[in-house]
Every structure is written in structure tokens, then in C-alpha cells.
Image 1: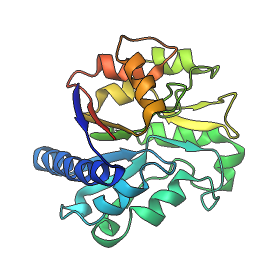
Image 2: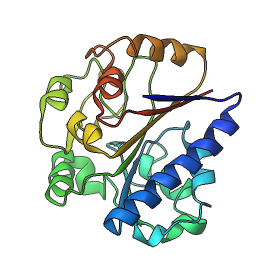
Image 3: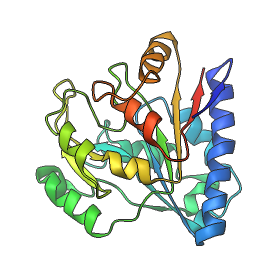
Image 4: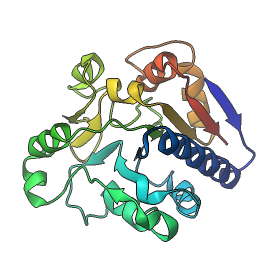
Length: 226
């Protein structure tokens, strides 16, 4: 694990944008293309607004999501809508995008979205994660009934989870997919999340799912904090 501490969230976002862009350049150089899976919510917006200006071969990049709420693609809570609004513009407008929820039919039947995504599976090369104060990352919530499956599956892919404390069902990458990425970036800010991170760094436990990524990723996780 590599830790990078910053004095402001703006500095964190700028440094992380540079690092993520470099990781994408490396993947493109090796494979000719790269898959970037990003998180939603408000926290990554400053990153997106910097990353979209980075000069890389965006036409060789496919952007997708680490997780998504099971809502229509134009819903206010849609991570896909947030990515289209804040990332897939300027230079990054040339990237392809694979939404996790494509239409109203998949909202009504999220298992069909998972089937679509897993049938056309492309392993993300670069993953950008956040972390909740309960220790969740992606939509691997400690109290979700599907957590054991998400942690136990050895085949990388997506599944549906139903976190008790969240207002919507979720589609999420499983732990195997997170661990199979070449580079994993985690960012957080503030003392509350710093305390969660400190606990998660003590060792792997399903009670803090982010700890499983921190302890098991073969290349180590890049952690950016402010």
C-alpha cells in the first residue's frame, strides 16, 4: 500500500488525476486499450473535473462504474449520470462508456443488467474507489445480505446487492474484480474516514470490506487522503 497525504481536497484531486491518467497510459501502452472503473457520489467529482482534461488516448479508454444504484439512467442518484456530467467531457469525451443500468427494463430487473455486464465482461485495468464511514467500498456494504457471495466469488464480475441502510438496490463489482485490477486507487477526506482507514489498515475483516482490498491487492493500493 502506498499512502499520499495532502493538505487540501483540491490538491488530493489534482494529484490523483495525474496518477490515474498515468496508470491509464501504462495500460494503453501494454494492451492498446484500457478499462477505467470509477466510483460515484459527490467525492470523486473534483477528480473527474481534473481527469477529463488530461491528455491521454481517451479514444482507447472504456469508462465504466465500480457500482451503481438501481435507478433510471437520468435519475438524480445515478452514478452514470454523474460520470456523463462531470467526466465524459473535454478530452475524456472521446472515451467509450458502459453504464451498469442501461434503461428502465434493467431498473425493473437488475439481474438482467448483471447478466449483460458479465456476458460482455472486460476486466477493469484501473479502479477508483471511495470509502464509507461504515467501511464499505464499491457497494460491498458490511450488512448487505449478498456480502458473503461478493467476497467469496472467485470469478470477477458484477452482482446485485441490497444494503439495508441504502435507499436503492445496487449493482457492484465483486471483490475478485477489484483485486484483479492492475491499479486500485482509494481516496478519502476528513477525520471520520481517517479513523475508519486506520482501523481497516490493521488487517482484513468482512466487517470493514475496504480492508480486504487494502490487504489483498497484489500490487498494493494507492491511497490518497486529505
